[in-house]
Length: 346
Image 1: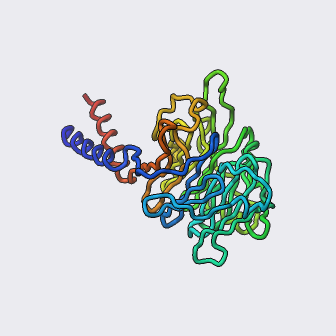
Image 2 (image 1 turned 45 degrees about the vertical axis):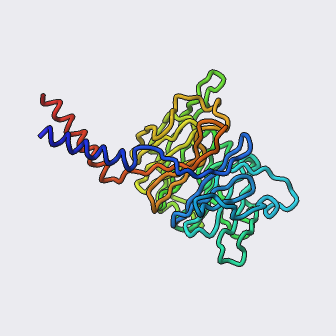
Image 3 (image 1 turned 90 degrees about the horizontal axis):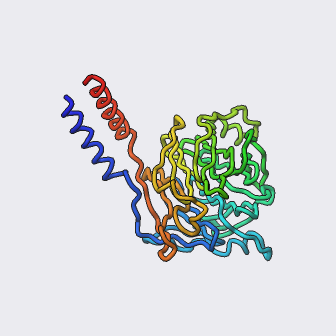
């Protein structure tokens, strides 16, 4: 019996390793940002991949990122000079509209990315959604509603993009220190990590604590209807130690992925923290222009996409991490459990 379990577990492990156990470069260069800035990634409901760097939006086609919408700054702000350092970037499920959070300048831009529309390539600021500095950005996959976080308070806002845009505070988090990335699962579950402390970077410590909050589809329905949401959210994990949550993605099983410059963390639906990729013993404050950048979940392919490079003498490349299917994870858990039972009996 023990031999059969070991053989089965070895086979499952081999399958998981060959299909999903590591990050793999796709050999595709990602547009490189200016110093101290980011290139952000997004994927629509059909699996089309987009990137934004500065005031240019790119689409992945023919094995390369091609400029798709250019001169966003001029189109959205006229003659005003606005720094665009994408802290958040999201595309609606249909792939027709993109939203860009400009980071430290606190502006929100709507971009028409539908080649079949009469307004293709246009960009406008949603002036009603301006704040001192914005960070996380996500689009509701069910209603197309826009959600933002504040860099300074971690507050969660809903944005109605009609007209000039209307911004409503949906949730203030007690003890929230600063905002970061947020993300939707394909079924509409919203995940909001909330930082509860700062990194002690002067002493070389880059970890800080985050609480993980989850909101269900009832919450989204209420926001879309213009009703004050009754769902208070579920704080399903507290004081997890991470070195970053600049970009966040959520898979179909509700697992959230938080990206720091040194690695990508995984928080499962029960709130358990693990490191998916990278070496999080590194200090992110020394990783300028290298490491991990941009993060998005490609639902049709069930994979994470992100940019990575080890040294600034080579370009950032697009990487994928194919996520194990639940059945594979279940077999792994079953095999490990059987081994533990066997050890207790011997």
